[in-house]
Amino acid sequence: MAPPRRTAGLALLLFLGACGFFQSCAVEVDVKDASNVTCLYAQWMMKFLIKYETNSSDYKNASLDLTSTVTHNGSICGSDTQAALLAVQFGDGHSWSVNFTKNNETYRAEFITFTYNTNDTAVFPDARRQGPVTIVVKDAMHPIQLNNVFVCHHTTSFEAENVTQIFWNVTMQPFVQNGTIGKKESRCSADTPTAAPTVLPTVANVTTASTTVSPAPTTAPTPAENPVTGNYSLKTGNKTCLLATVGLQLNISQNKPLLINIDPKTTHADGTCGNTSATLKLNDGNRTLIDFTFVVNASASVQKFYLKEVNVTLLNHQNGSVILSADNNNFSKWDASLGNSYMCRKEQTLEITEDLQVHTFNLWVQPFLVKENKFSIAEDCSPEVDYFIVPIAVGAALGGLVVLVIMAYFLGHKKHHNAGYEQF
Image 1 (cartoon, one colour):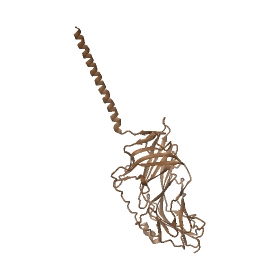
Image 2 (cartoon, rainbow, N blue to C red; image 1 turned 90 degrees about the vertical axis):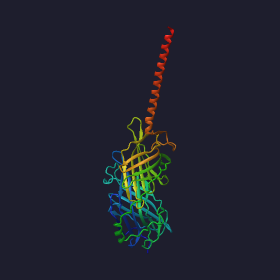
Image 3 (tube, helix red, strand yellow; image 1 turned 120 degrees about the horizontal axis):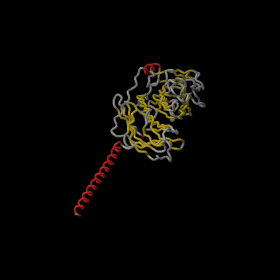
Image 4 (cartoon, rainbow, N blue to C red; image 1 turned 45 degrees about the vertical axis):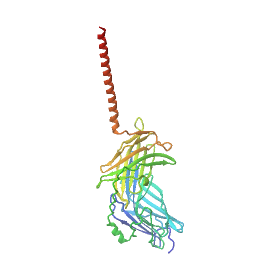
């Protein structure tokens, strides 16, 4: 077979499963060269979580899935001197692509480019910024042996510029040799050695897959202890712009009650810093995404920051589908003077919905004006009992003082009276 041509002559796209509200469509792309043989093959599922600014200067979270109409314009087979490109377009002006390079022995993904269009009012009904927004992420994929199929059932995500890209059930091979997809798999490190092998799709397999129900999520055991406290930070350039220390626990009462402790050892911090708004995005690398958004109240006589919004997304760690997604953007908690930090050692509860709460432990946070990578003066939340103990103690002391004054008065008056009788 001749080397792959630079242009794709024909591509066949097949769609697996239904596109439900919480379930992204699966897509299969088989790019063929001018000789009508496969040069690039991919099957995967993906979705996007996007935080965007509204016309009222608030921030909202949007979920963008592949639609039932996907095109592949711009896909390129690639060659020894040109990168291969897998490109898809979907919805109202959204697109995603990944380019691959190779040497004599291996290939690897280099960059992922995602463009979302805020003119899509169905997804971004009140976006302040109008038009396409492009995000480029350098892929961390390790080199794969040529003619091996890259497979990753496990959920993988990338976070950059208020966008979380989520992928799962990935089967992919660029630079296909002799038009035949490789039979040997190279698994991602997150997949266990015993994970079920991927069956290369055929038309028959597509029909079967469309009627297969995704496996139920594995229920995590109820934690017996409070969560481990994690230390998180964000930087702008080389300067730290946000600091947070907190232990996090999710309390989910939907269906079967469930407590989930967030493990800081496997949790990655990302987000954005600004003068009046900052967002800390935590991804535990497995099943949970939590976003905390802080804003500055500039209308007050003394400028203060406070927590305004919390967004929680719980994923099925087996296939990446969204089990639960909820947010509350009406908080007014964790407030402190701008330039200071907020501290609360006691347990607090953030009510996201009736079925979802976030418990925090040993909280210390400063989302603005961090200096020298250290927390500034902390404004502590005092336990409610302190508000009663102090007045009671003061009242008791004052009461005792009044009693002593009265007793001293009577004793003194009595002594003076007795002394008067002795004079007569």
